[in-house]
Amino acid sequence: MNAMDLLAGLGGFGESLWSYLIPFLFVLTVVVFFHELGHFSVARWCGVKVSTFSIGFGREIFGWNDRHGTRWKVSWIPLGGYVKFAGDENAASMPSREQLERTPIEERSGLFHFKPLHQRAAVVAAGPIANFILATVIFACIFTFLGRSIATPVVDEVRPDSAAAAAGFVAGDRIVAIDGSPIASFEQMQRIVTGNGGAELRFDVARGEETVALTAVPEVQEVTDRFGNVHRIAMLGIVRHVDSGNVEVVRSDPVTALWLGAKETWFVAERTLSYIGGIFTGTEDPDQLGGPLRIAQVSGQVATIGFAALISMTAMLSVSIGLLNLFPVPMLDGGHLLYYAVEAVRGRPLGEQAQEYGFRIGLALVMMLMVFATWNDLVHLQVFSFLSGLFS
Image 1 (cartoon, helix red, strand yellow):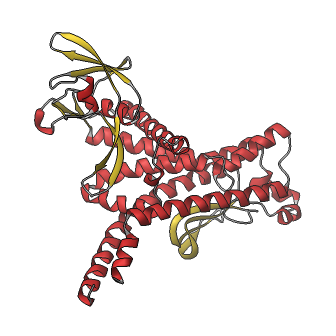
Image 2: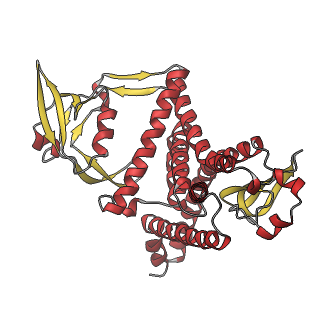
Image 3: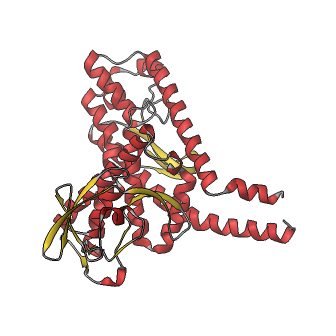
């Protein structure tokens, strides 16, 4: 590689960096802000003194104090955020035992760690719940103002040597039900298929004047999207042509849209948990797991489609962040809730040393997950190939 090639490569890399960075920061800031706002709002409602509300970590860029004495700030490292309560030793809400013991009794009412168990649990759970509410509201707004494109579940084409061809599907078939569940749209059929790779599915198909029962096993295949990203998706080999008609854009009233938004949030959560479970059982490929770099890349790519697509991705990421924080791992909200569950059973909190060990184990697990996800990101983004090309 000569000097001009190197400069051109670095210039393109810098251009891509900015096109990815701005959408990424938008998406992450919105999701983190609402997560921390959930903690903050319920803490205030329970009378907890909040010392800091931070978007990002590290040194403060700018901030201000509200009338309750909370420092609202934006920090240099924009990969998360935290709410710090009075009496916390750090941003992970680990208490400073010595400081708590020295706190006068008349001042303890405003400290998080002296609050009743149910209030502490509510404050901790409020963050993930806020993420689910945010996702539901975003989806509801999309369904209300933009609507949903609903295509009839009719087969326009059957790919040769596919699972659908082996099962006996033909062009013109209309899928009525899958495993007894009625099918109203092509998208609904796709969602069931993609979530059941390698599983046998029974299809009730309307063919002319009769109903035919077919059995098919979706095959997991590698699919390249419009941006060149490779995904492993279960497919039948059924094609629905975009220009074949019978596609309707349906806008819902706000109440119906909220219900549909909640169902969409549940679907994203269910698919996320199914994927994570599949990693442990060996049915899902762990190299699809991405970290901050992958999120930044996808954010930039989705932003080129339009603002609505970026908002939709924000909702899906919000669900994922909410779920991740509910995992029973110390350092995460789910770890705190696990400690509170043990406290409820024992009638007293775990010992300080036990909690300390738990937080250390949790930190190690979180760090290992971050390292693994970042490694996947670097491989996926072909960073190693780029670096080797600089010196070849």
